[in-house]
Image (cartoon, rainbow, N blue to C red; front, side, top):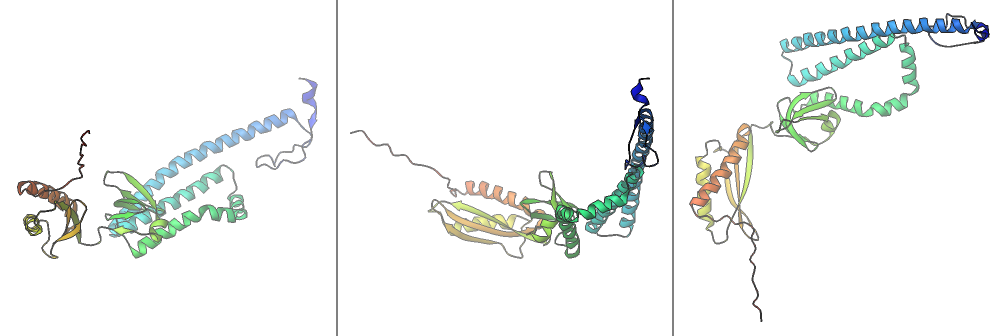
Length: 297
């Protein structure tokens, strides 16, 4: 062996878990390499154990979540509260598992807590939005501006509430997209709940040509409304002259229907009006341009 390996290396202090029991003062390079290899092997074993615990822990968490959901269903908890509690329990168990895995790797949890405490202000700013979303979720559950299954419009989005999680509310849009909206904005912003009331009023504005008799057009529309079984008779529908527009006389139709029949009635009335107006020779104007050709001198 070359002479250089017989020389001693003077290492006064190394602050690393696993090295503190070893005396590196006047240690040879071979001894340092041997000790380092042993520590790497020990860490590798810990890493394998940690990964195994993580895998088994996730399985256990999934099993506990299923048991928890079963208990909530037996207690007939409201779906909105059930969704929130399920999300809360899942996140709490995941945090506990993460801390346990970190401790297996040899990282002292107290040092992590001390690090978080020392950077408390920065952490506070970083998670302020998350805490706001959590508080918003609690407020939503307390005041219930909407429930699972309601159709709402908020934050420039609209859809059916599928789930109220600990930080987000999940919507399914009409075209089957999944939208996640933070609870903080929903708790402090404007939310339109289209499912809260039993009945909804639809409004259709139809333009007819100048020269058409309003009374005749009104009778035709009223007949269409009376023949539509899903239009409610109480409250009564309204047919009125809405506006004298630049190229048409606008007639407004306001009718009430059950919330679940809203779009069926809306589309069917438009179809009936178009077909019957054509049969009754009621003109529906559309934008057009008249061009006058000047004669050459």
